[in-house]
Length: 399
Image (cartoon, rainbow, N blue to C red; front, top):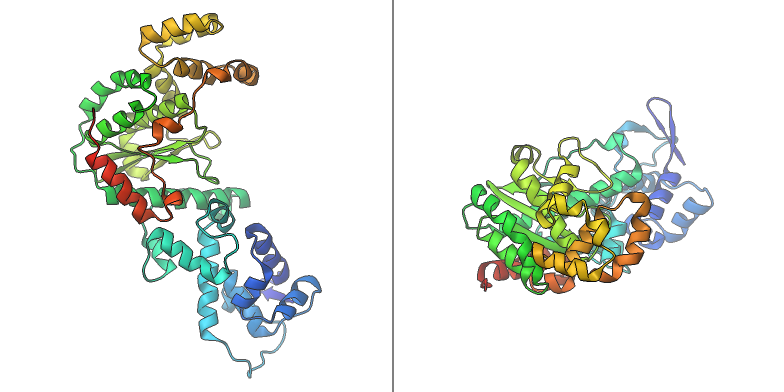
């Protein structure tokens, strides 16, 4: 069946449905049940090209987010057909879910269970986000400015934007619930920054101590495992006049953890007005910003760990573990960080070769983040993860 739009253009419902099923890995049987369409009729519609009843086509239109008033049916409506209002409402909710969320990625990371029925999607999302009435609460959940136009991005870009928006909304809500009680002192933060590198010497508790100290300066840092689909290693924002930072442990490398923290703190100090206007900033290697200088933030992160004059000559000493050990002692920084900064600054054409040489000197970040990791996906819902991290931020003592 083809529906004719007012401008004369014909659109195949069949192709649109097939694409949704393919993109989101939705079981055909579950979708047919949700739309209240006989399984055999639905299968014949998708695979054999047979038409559906008008009311069945109407259910698909709602599922695809189309307004039936904009369409002219290609045949007369059978007035005896009855519309199941409950099914229409379920279909509209499902359409909303597919419009707002990347269902496929949410299945992969476990927020939506892989083998769950399609009608359970709303319940599982509401459970994770802590909603009580319906999935439509998402519209008012930690609202953010949408920084893109739906009509100007590709399908893949749109999918990533959905995940980014989901991630940022969850992060903003988490920061709001944590509600850092300490006054933010920017000058104190600037004085503290040059001392942070010393904490890299303690791979077990150093990072944890810095996060707890920053919290008492009014700066809230949430450290998370990398979430598939967002493509970001960090984010910065201001909430109620206080800085909030997300560090995504994307590479699970010790040096990258520290570099990401410094990168985001650069934005907090240098881009406050822009952050307060734009609501948030996502740091991503694949998506450069016109308003935030990522290169300067990267350079700042490197210099906070290794002075510029020293980093210029690292290539001359990197081959000698003994000299690196001595250098790290002089700089008061962990040797793994020295190797990491060197590798991050290596020319692109040499990076793979250099990584293969010195990767054995890098240590992982898991031990550093173990006590301070924010893990809503592993916990199963935001509420419990927020309660857990609040307990740590408010009550762990800084030795």
